[in-house]
Every structure is written in C-alpha cells, then in structure tokens.
Length: 482
Image (cartoon, rainbow, N blue to C red; front, side):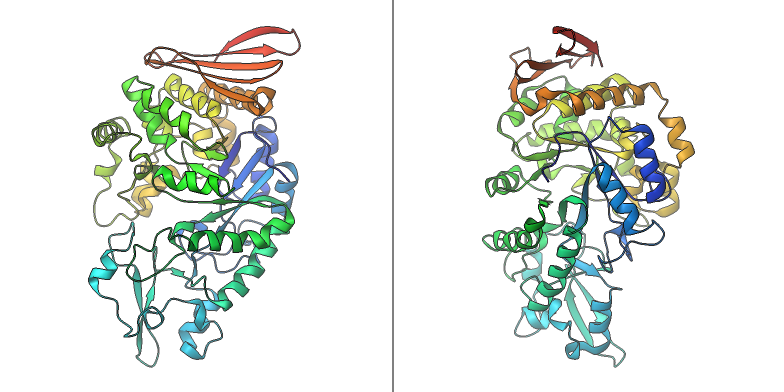
C-alpha cells in the first residue's frame, strides 16, 4: 500500500464542497489527474478545534457523511487520515465517565491528574514553566465535580482537548482498538497529530522526550503496520527532529519550506533554500500551506534571526498585516510560533510569484501537499475571522460547489492545475534529484529517471518559471512556461 509519489490535496470534509459526497464529486470532476492523494482532515464527531477534539474514531460525523463516503474517496485516491495521539475530547464517554465518577471510573487511569504526576498532587510554577507549550497559559485545566471537589489535569492545548496518559494500560487498550479500526479502512497513511506532546514527565519540557517517543511510535506502528498503513508523525520544531524521525524509518514533514520559500522569493536569493534541499529528509511530505499557519520555529538555524525577522516583516506587509489587525484579546489562535495567512496572500496575490513557489515545492524532495485554499489561490478571509474571532480562520474559507466551479476557472488556478498534473504524472520524479549550479538569484532543480528528465528553472527576480523535460512521445526535449 505504498503512497504514490503524486501531489496530495489537504482538505476538511466540508470545505471543498459541503460534505464528503460533494468533496468526492469535486475531486473526480476537477482533479482526477492533478492529485494522487487526499489528506482528509478530521471527520469524526468532535467538540472543538474543527475536528481535532474527537469524541471517538469509530464514527463519521453525520454532518459530513458516512464511512462509505470515506471509503469511496479512499478507493479513488491515496487516503491520509488523522489520529490525535496526545488527547481526547472533554465530551468523550471516556472523560465524561471519569468526570462523573472520579477514581471509580474504569477510564480514570487514562488521564494525567496532578495526583498521578506528583506525590503531593501539586506541580510548582518553576516546573510548569519548563514545559514547552505554545499557549499563553500553564498546561493544565481545573475540573470541579458535583461534590465540590477539584482536580488539576494535564491539558496542553484547548480545554476541550484533554491529554491522555500513553503509558496507561487503559489508554493503550482504547487507542489500540481505535488504531486497528482506522487501519482497516482504505487509508494508506495515518497522521499522528501533536505526537511530540505525548511524553509528560515533571521536571522536563515534556516535548519529544527520548527514548520514550520512539517507544510510543513503535507501539503505534505495531497496530497499523499489519494493514500496510504508514505513519506520519507531526512535529513543528527544529529540523533535527525531522532528521531523527527519518533516521528511525518514518515519514516526516517539511515544515521549514514555507518560510524559507517566502525568504527566497521576497529577497531574491536561493542560498538558504538550496542549503536546506541539500540536507533535508527525503522521506518527507512537503507543504507551503496547511490548516494551521505558516511556521516560524521550524526554520531556526536554517535562517538567521535577522533573516527570519526580515521575512516576517515582509509577511506582515505583503500578507495584509493580519497579526496586527487581529491582535486583540477577543481573537483566538493568534499563535506566536506561526503566522495566519493564506499563501497566495503572503505572495501579494502575484500569480507568477505563487506559481514559482509551487514549482519549487513540487521539485523539492518529497511528496507535495497542496491545501484546498491554496489550490484555489484563495486570499485572506477577513470576514470569517471577524465573525468567528479565530485567527486561523483567515485561511479556512469553505467553498461551495458553485464557488469551486467559479474559482477553478481563474487563470492562476488553471496554471497551477497544469503544473500539478505534470508533477503527478511525469516519471522522472521517481528518480534522482539534483540542484544545478546557477547564480544566487535563480534556482534550477532537476529530476532524472532515464530516459526521462525534468528541470525547473526559476528567475527569483522576475518569477519567470520554465520547465524543460524529455517528451516520451516525440522523444525530444520540450519546454513550457509555468
């Protein structure tokens, strides 16, 4: 069940069409040759964070459709689905039973009570300050039961997302059954969301603790591998983590590419990007845009502090200054480690610059993913953010079938679809990769698999992009302008 080396689409179950049925139609109608896979963001019943606070993995939210709808998509495309490995919904039967019955609950051992983490039931501020968290609050929530008793529970993200203890036999039993259930679907890959936050140990930063993380990955893999399913651990941090993940034989993400790409295109220099392509993992999934923001922490040591700040200043200017517009306390998810902006808006809605970015992404090592808003060259949705007060919604517009039919006709989208079809169907991308020697204000990338060869040449000042390739029909070299 190996993943095809073709472009993948990232989409919510209700964002590229109103539900899974409409999504499947849109994929078949508009993208049959452009993509080989679909990363279908969480479609399970959920209490928060647009699917990322699941109550269970045994059901499909009826608002989206049924398991049959999921399977039909998986029949036509490589299917990637999510498993939130460090938490479960506050509204799940597991937590609700624990909330009502306390230590008498059969699920009590699943959760990380401070009573379990500390002999005194308390963890000092100094210890909590060590924890690597991306929220401006301590990593716990206080619950109060009907009898008036209170208890502190480990909670890394939203208060609806209660962390679980992956060392607990009960958690292992529940998660084992979920993983087997998901692996028996048509999914070819399961994305292990928030994987780095699975290791909780008082006195540490509780982030990607070794060797525990490798023991956890091995345990997770035990239940998906028999079904031929791959795992994609999700980690937003320094590239050394991704190198380690690759060294252990797993797929990983290229989250450094988005900001490196903006630096390259804003400042007309390929040096940093070329260096990254020389050392980056090969067994990786590349992104420019996702359901989250444009990562900042991911480029540490790949760009200097001055280069990062200069690029962020440019992103503020070119991306409509979203961080400052929506900086009030009433807005949620304005993360310090990422910038909320569509990638098309980040490049000033400049078609040539945007197509240059996608070309470089598609020629970079790895399997490329394109977020659905990026597919349609969507711009920042300010009205949605004003309504929801959720900063990430700037890049989460839901497209109806009527809107898709209209947006797909835009010249920039037509050009992108042609590029995606080339990347998904041309044989050379299964071969050898080479970075050609050109001036710093250009970048030239080549893939070769005899007799096939494809070279992308991008002028980083004008954004003119040209692809030269061996045409198997004419048996001659051919060229097209992206």
